[in-house]
Length: 325
Image 1 (cartoon, rainbow, N blue to C red):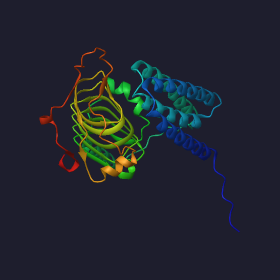
Image 2 (image 1 turned 120 degrees about the vertical axis):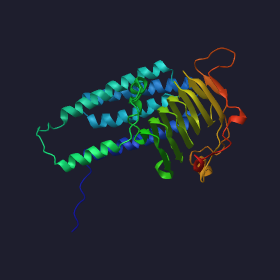
Image 3 (image 1 turned 60 degrees about the vertical axis):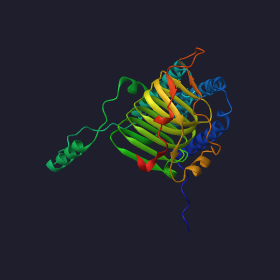
Image 4 (image 1 turned 30 degrees about the vertical axis):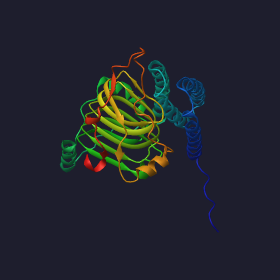
């Protein structure tokens, strides 16, 4: 006689429901976001954010901490996406409100965690030597700037990416990228190749890096990038607080820059095997769209913005080839 399978635990049920809800929210958002103007997107964000924060408050009041954590994670994704179209002060307010919920969730988890008894543990000389060698060999990025610390919170929940590295060649391909949120943070002198179709890409606090990326299904958000070359195709593009950086882009809508100086643009020209298939995966088969239609949120005058320019043809890299960098 076979044993009766154990019923799923409460945590498993919560995780399953949260995964189903996040999948449905993502599906609806992708269907709607491209056709909405920035003002309509902001209005929709405000309504959704208010509903979700009210739900978070109710969950915390009744002690459903893990369910609240799952919902907060989904709301963080929403805030990350909104960085592309929300005014900076609205984004700061939303992130500040969410940060307070995240702090309450951490506090409640700490309260519920069993207290560990303190005890000294002797370590052998061999263990200490191994730990020292590992520490000596580790290549660390320079300390993050104040701006990086202030803006790091909204990227904490993005699980996939490369962070805190110097002088590395970093490559990711295929299925690990497809449909996922990726983040690059606090990199210096690195070459990054993302050969696939991620859902979103966040780049923050990078210095003197080359970033080559296949088609991003939704949006790319950059913050605090200096002295870089970024090659990417996407539906929405926004660069914030960046300077002395060249962008080779293919964007479904006009690219947005804010608080940027000396940034330049050219057409997307990355080449690698499988690129056409990745455009299809990202539902961007009709690429070759916009690369020089730039909205500078800091420049409202009728004359062209002095903060960005087109890269002269004789200064452009003819084709970005992954094997050549």
